Length: 323
Ligand SMILES: *[C@@H]1O[C@H](CO)[C@@H](O)[C@H](O)[C@H]1NC(C)=O
Image 1 (tube, helix red, strand yellow):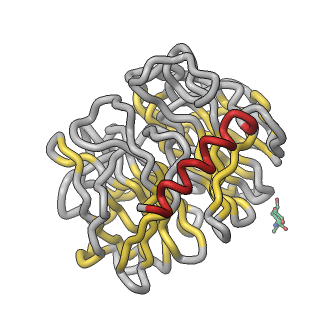
Image 2: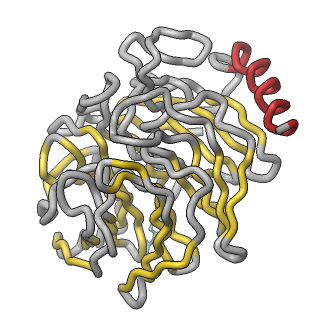
């Protein structure tokens, strides 16, 4: 309890001064997506001629959209079999793996091969869930929390990529959440923020939950400086974890927290994974929720689509964040 209170104080002091203060990142707008998408899933794959291709899909359109980061052009790929949304995604062996989802395909693993422009099915999940926190660690995809039967669960299940099989036995999260930001670093799983209960926009929570697959134990770290959900995936760059945007049912605008009048966040929270200290980076120029940031081989973070208003909202925005 004492440690938690201390973190709160530190964060409150830092907040005002750093929200628009010294930060390293630069935002740029790129060619808009051909369609507007919300609740995005994404991954960066490498094409046959060694170019980087951003694969984007989500809510609002069943298509697969491919953005070549060299030519800055969009084209369409084969559509996935189960449309769904709020789908977990990981890039493994230059394929985009989709896990679960809401509305459709909740127990599906859908695997996209860019070279063949083809989708393949993986082993079904033991239950239907979407908006879970995922990470790929040591040959296994951890699929934790999320929404199942219109409620939030705390269970974690794992998918063994090589054997194409689901396993149980991973410890449940201390706090089951949906719409949280997850990432991995040094074989640990980090889950920041998120919401609980039914799938509706709320203020969200500030928990930082850290799982160690080696000990099968969770612990809590210093909380996310502003409670919220809808930040999509978190990305790790040089030992720093970035949490972008998000949404809240708290009414904006609020310059101190970076909440806009449409109730999405501009803020970019950065967790130093060595010291577990939170700082802020340059606010988003197109603040959104339901995004799925992905980092390329040069450390550029791509964010395509996402809602510009809290709740049901889609956009064609395509931005890149570079340090
Ligand atoms: C592919 O591109 C990466 C970086 O963009 C480069 O480091 C690598 O050498 C390239 N590989 C080949 C086979 O050209």
